[in-house]
Amino acid sequence: MKTLTLDQYDVVRRLRQFSVLTKPRVNSLIVFCAIIGMFLAVPEGVPSAGVVLAATLGIACVAGAAAAMNCLIEQQIDARMARTRARPSARGELSNSETLMFAGVLGAIGLWMLYALVNPLTMWLTFATFVGYAVIYTIFLKPRTPQNIVIGGASGAMPPVLGWAAVTGEVSADALLLFLIIFAWTPPHFWALALYRTADYARAGLPMLPVTHGSKYTRLSVLLYTFILFGVTLLPFATRMSGLIYLVSAVVLGGMFLRYAWRLYVDYSDTLSQRTFRFSIVYLSLLFAALLVDHYLRF
Image (cartoon, rainbow, N blue to C red; front, side, top):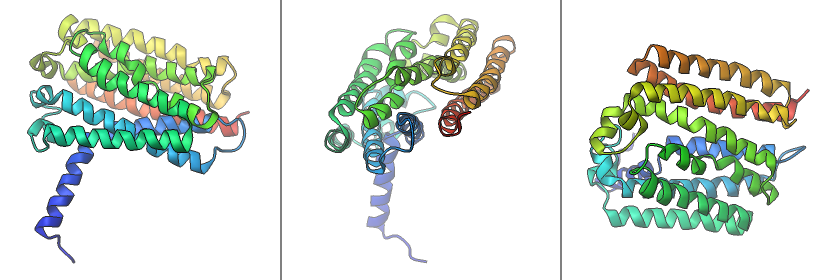
């Protein structure tokens, strides 16, 4: 079995460090939702493979660049938090100039791909999403208001809209419904994480809702937003965007999410909060997968 030389090992290590900056797990969910948007945008059949590939790579590159900029801007904050202090930017393993250069090159490549190989609308929407997350949310909202994730959630809700625009060259009402689902999902998803990381955020000086308003208020907010989410997820069926397969899936998944949120409110524990956060990711993935299955097997 061939072993790596010291130089080769260093190259692999550096590549892994840059990869961590892109927040691969978050990026994969972004790309997944964008791809679902691409397929739902086509009334019959499937979208062009070339457009899907170019849009997927372009959106992934820009999302990775936004994540790297977030790591750069929050370098000092990340170093004070247990959840993020292992990031190479927080540990000083990558210099600020290296991180900035990486984000700039990756973002430029992604935007060029979207402009040249997809369409200008998708490029501009993706660029606006980049600014919304890396600048408006990270610099202005996150350190100033406990409602940061609600307002900033607009950027995180854009992936299916980007996918839709990539295939159709426009943003329709159905695309905005997909946006609304993720927008309503973001607060209970993120606050479930913030609840068991309250001490981390307090130490970092960030005004997250559990820090400023306490655990009980945040748990009530999670419950109320989950009710809102449940109602919003029924809209695709109400507008005839989807059929019975999606409706049944939305009701079952929504009921499970509500059960988690109710238990979190009445009998809180850090373990339950972690489980709620993890379920919220599975929930969104299965909900969008159900939309896709329904799209092709509707009855």
